[in-house]
Image (cartoon, rainbow, N blue to C red):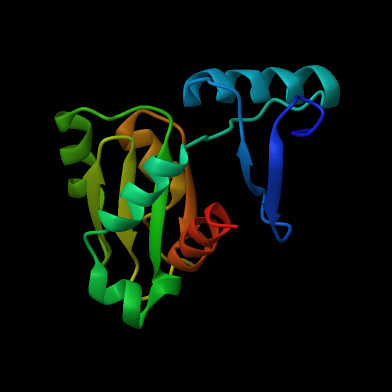
Length: 154
């Protein structure tokens, strides 16, 4: 689909739903809308796409507020790409809703979450995060974040 839309240098990460590609001079929001329209029209699939530019992705990696977890426990460190930046009130509501040992740091259209006991039984679910922040989100563990960063350099 990406190649058919005219994107070039398309690389996918396994079967994870993640791709790295070069796009014509368009904003991330424009590319998201184009991909969402194409998925709806060609596949009958209504889904969200989360697009970040290469420089944005590199900034995401560099801004990680959990550098120790990134080294020692990257599978429990999660980046959440958000559709919109939540307001301060929404951020406070999310932090107040955390009942376990998880911690979250918000940074614009991203959130970093550390799940020291794993995500499997955590009450800090994607649905809870979306509900409190008032925006859609998609999560990737830190290993995936770094693999995508490596694809940028290929």
